[in-house]
Image (tube, rainbow, N blue to C red; front, side, top):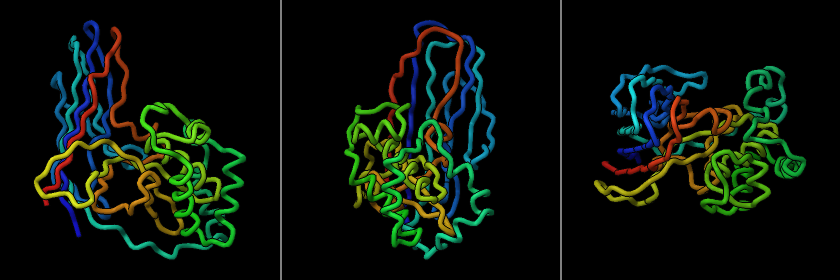
Length: 280
């Protein structure tokens, strides 16, 4: 059963004095892809500016914009209406020998490598061996997401935006970004190409049509075993009609909703607010 979900995502910054120049990128436009169709999307920026839109290396829609007038506040409001579908059937996938083929390893080299956020650890290598033993790749990948779900405790404020997978695993807690990074580290240790996915998750399983509720950005993973398979290690729910995808990449650094640099005084984050409404 498909859903129609409206999203309103607002981010604001205030500066202690005039900023004379800033250079920014927003990854806040949901793509139309398999299982998801974007019916409407817009971006309102204050001070007013017209962004340049392009697709990045990972296929994510990016709105790049520069501001060259003095300003003491920056507000970015992204609105969209997305039609989502239920979970895709899980394929049988390749066997381990197929995944070990040099052409496969070369094709997905960037999604098998470590990054600043996704670290290699001997402990995860051992866990990976146990998850892989006697299991086909698809099952091992899903077991990796379940392992993270059972191992980490969801705790706001326990980590920060720059926390690595190793730091989150050591702390034993974190938020969805950390759950995704730890799962990516484990999937890559197993030998499964894996990517970070950013987006939104409607918090209500049986949401009423027309009801608006507070939401937030969300993160999950996709791993490749002959086809891409999505898994949500934070909630361990099937990725389907409540999930809205925004961006994909190697880790959080590739999918940051709003990033940039500026010339001026100290900035204060006014806050990030997300509202989601099921419209059908």
